[in-house]
Length: 522
Picture 1: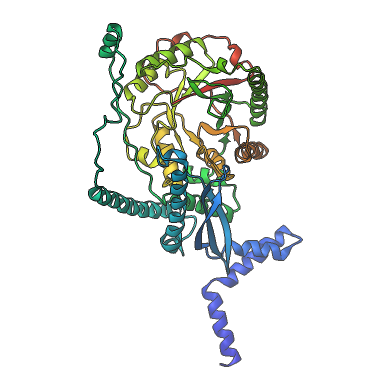
Picture 2: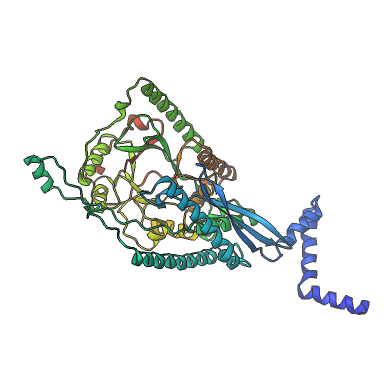
C-alpha cells in the first residue's frame, strides 16, 4: 500500500468519525480557558465523547457482617474506554427475620452459608454473563433482568418444596394438639375464669411465613453494586445519582432523613427485664442539625447507661420487670397504647405495636392515635417485593423498607413513590445484623425519605452510617442545596378524638429537641 493511499484511507477514517471537527472544537474551547494542564483538559474533553462504559464482569464473594456472620458482596467491573476496571463493590446483609424460624443457631448459620454460596453461583453462572456488555446506567433494565431471573428461581424452589412435601412420610406417634391450639391445663378453672375465657375472642393464628429463597441476596447485592458503579463512573455522589434517578433530573434541594436513634435496648443482653418494650428510640425535631441530634442522643444514652449500671450493681434488676406474668389480648394492647400516648405527648411513633395478624387492632389503634403518633411496621410488615404485589399488610403509617434479599434498587424506588402517593411517610432501615456498607444512607437521602432507622450509636457498622449522614449534610450545606424537613405530618387513619386537644407547651421529654419512639416487645 502506497503512502498516499494510506494517508487518504486514514483521512477518510477520521473524517467519517468527525475527528477533525471535534479536535478543532476542543482546541478552541481549551485555548479560551488557558489551563496549565492542556493535555489533562484534552483528555477530559474527549473522555465525554468516548463510548459509554460497559459491564465486563460481575463477581460475588463471601464476606463477614458486623456480627461476624457470613454475607454477600458483589463486585462490578466495567470496560472504560480501552481497559477493564474494577469499579465498585457492594455488600448486603441477610435480614434475620427471613431466616428459618424456630431453628437452632447451627441450622440458621448453615442456611445462611448455603444462601450466600447459592447467590455466588447464580452470579457466576447466570447473572454475570447476562449483564456483560450492558451499560451500568441502565438500572431499570438491569433490575428487571434480576427480578425475572429471581421469579424463575422462586418457581423452581416452590416446585422442589412441593415435590419434597409429596414424598414426605409422617412418622408414627400420638396425635398432638395443633400449634395454634393451647394444651388444656390440668388446673380447674374458676367460674369467673371460664366466663372470661368464653367471652374473649381468640386472637387470629399466626400466618404461615413465606420461606426465604436461598440465593435471593444476589439480587439486592448486584443491583446496589451496579447503581454505585454508575454513580462512580459519572463522578457523582451516590445520593445525588439516586435523586436524579427518582426525579429524572438533579433536584434543587435534598433534605436529610430524620433518624430513629435507638437509645435503650431491652433485649436479653440488657440488664433487667422490660416486658412491654423491646427498644426505646429518640427522634430529633425537624430542622435539628444532624451533628447536634447525635450529640443529644449520645448524651442521653450515656446518662441512661450510668443509671442502668447503678441499678445493676445494686442488685435491683427486678425493677425493670414490667407486669411480669400478665398477658393482654390485642384489644387490651390497643387500650394500653392509647392510654400511654395520651399521658406522654412526646411519644410520636410506635414500631410493631402488634402482630401483623392483628389487622383489626392495627386499624383500631390507627383510628385512635394515628393523627398524632406514627405506627410503623418493621417485623410486622412484608418485604418490598410483597408490598409492590399488594400483599395484605397491616394498616400502618408506613412500612420500614429494606434493601435485602430479592429487593432491587428499582423496587425500592417504586415502593417509595407508591407510599408517597398514598400521603404516608417513607421510612428506610437496615437489617439488625448489618455490615459496614453505608450506601443505605445515600439511598435514603437520594430517595427523599422522611425517616431512616439505623439502630443505636454503637458498633462500627452503625456509627459509619451516622457519620455518612453528617458528611452528606455538610456536603449539601456547602453546596447550598440542603433542604429542611417539614414538621411531623401524620397520615389520616380516621377520627381521633384527642387530635383536637394537643397541648400547646412542650412536654419535659422533648425540651431538648427530641421526641420518643417505642419498639414494643413482640
